[in-house]
Length: 113
Image 1 (cartoon, rainbow, N blue to C red):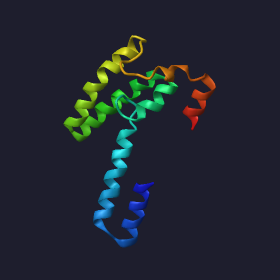
Image 2: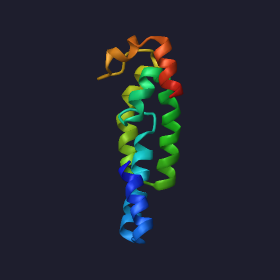
Image 3: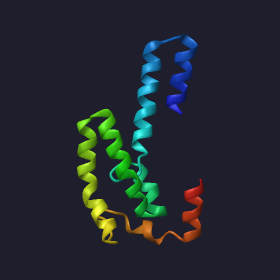
Image 4: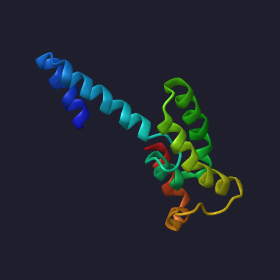
């Protein structure tokens, strides 16, 4: 919401600073929703299925090669133990066991919402 407010204020006042701030915040939010641990997008996808993290891994690599950011490489390294645990069908280290006990109907609602 704050990003949209900043964007509309930037358009209203024709402010390059507010526009740059809203643009940066939009991409930070979008990046944070990548479905791989330790990013926030992994929290909701862990409820639906941890195997979705394997979609986030290639997306993270594409972002790394596109942006050439060392931070993305660090996040990828932090995600490796999580991805290995999912591959072995084990509970990832530090994962909330309550995510696995969510009923299937509720998971479908989360997936569609």
